[in-house]
Amino acid sequence: MLTKLKILIVEDNQSDADLLKRELKKAGLDFIAEIVQTRISFERALVNFNPDIILSDYSLPSFDAVTAFRIKQNKNAHIPFIIVSGVIGEENAVELIKDGVTDYVSKAKLFTVSTKINRALSDTAIRNEKNIIDGNLKIQQQELLKSNGLLIQQKAKVKAINLELSKLNLELEERVANRTKALAESEYRFRNMIETIPQIAWTNTTKGKVIFYNQRWYDYTGLNNKQTQLAGFNFVIHSDDLQNSIVSFSAILKTKKGGEFQTRGKGADGLYRWHLIRLMPILDEGGEMHLWVGTATDIEELRILQQQKDDFISIASHELKTPITTLKASLQLLDRLKDKSASPTLAKLIVQANKSMEKVNVLVDDLLNASMANNGQLHINQQQFILADVITESCQNVRVQAEYNLITIGDLSLKVNADPIRIEQIIVNFVNNAIKYASNSKHITISIEKQGIMAKVSVIDQGAGIAKEKLPYLFDRYFRAEDRETNYNGLGLGLYICAEIIKKHNGKIGVDSVVGKGSTFWFILPLA
Image 1 (cartoon, one colour):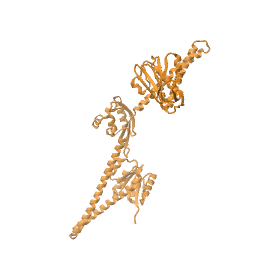
Image 2 (cartoon, rainbow, N blue to C red):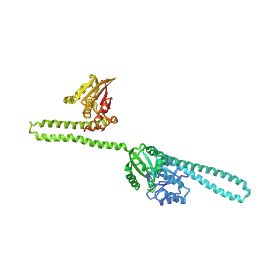
Image 3 (cartoon, rainbow, N blue to C red):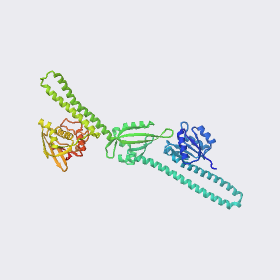
Image 4 (cartoon, helix red, strand yellow):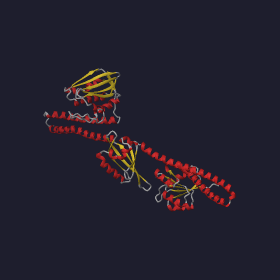
């Protein structure tokens, strides 16, 4: 009759113990279990319960697996001892196995525990059998001394026993080799994980000495291993940031919580980029720091976006404050002159107030349109209309002032299917830019031409032109083509909104410019 397997479980969490027992039953093991939480109950169970195998959590409030294993080794070294834990870590598990612990099972992989129990029991049975055989061998050797007549028979038995021992030794050597291979594969997986993350990563000792860099470090810095060992961080970090970085790095190493700081690192191209440095400790079972893992995340673009946001807020505040200040002054003067209806200043103040209000209105519209474009909520109401009519209407104010010679040429009968209000917004923006940035050019030409199934509208000025390096960025949000000859900067949203409007129409937008000869801003729309 087979006896039930006796399993001693060292676990302070009843739920985890129940889960472990369910997993063992699911695997088909026929067993009885006793659960203990303290050293006293563990020592008592070793004597009274006499377990076949021990399954122990790594860390308990008043007890731990290392202590339990040492107690077991003193009097019951033959009993297999398996650690079942979710916090031990690969390196700690390897060290314990080297010390004699039978095996290790992660709580996240309890489905493997039955296999490892069977293997441990099998190994124990083999060792017990080997001990028995060794004992028999000693007895047989003694009998050989007593009876020379049985020498041939005893030699045959010894030969058979030796053959069995050789087989057992080969099996044990194979198992050791397999375990060594598993440990090597575990280390390879850790290194591979470090290599697959997009950040620069490294590990350093508690004293700060770096012992491993991933490939991202060498790709970014352009240094080889020898150069890295000689120079390391001191070569890569910007000289203005080096002292603060050393202080921050040292301060983090004195804690057990990790930390982060920002610094500039030089790449293989010689350019410095901002990085966020993070350091996190790896603690052993006693809570002592064993190693530090560090990463460096490229935040250059994030810093640029933050700076653009700050610049935009500053510019928007200035642009809004100027017309509001003028409007406030005009209203104060109007209030003083309200009872003097015949005053010639009254009309001028009203005109000035209206101009200031219009500037505020344009700035607010730009902000709203930019927000809608950014969120994909820029609405388009398409209808058929003649391009020349919308152009004439949108430029009426410029023609009335008679300061600029504005002419429209080309095919004045072309019809498109678009939103006339939005197209007028683009024409006004193009013409206003020609006036503001090419103020010395009094001739502005608007060209309408047919290109296959598309209509192209171009606004041409004869101003100073735009530098070639600025052209790719003119339609980017917040970009401002600053001009030393003018005081007008704007919010950097007008051309961005124009580009979003044309994109909604499935058209194209662009600019051609030559310094000293002028600029041509154009867009293309599908014909009606």
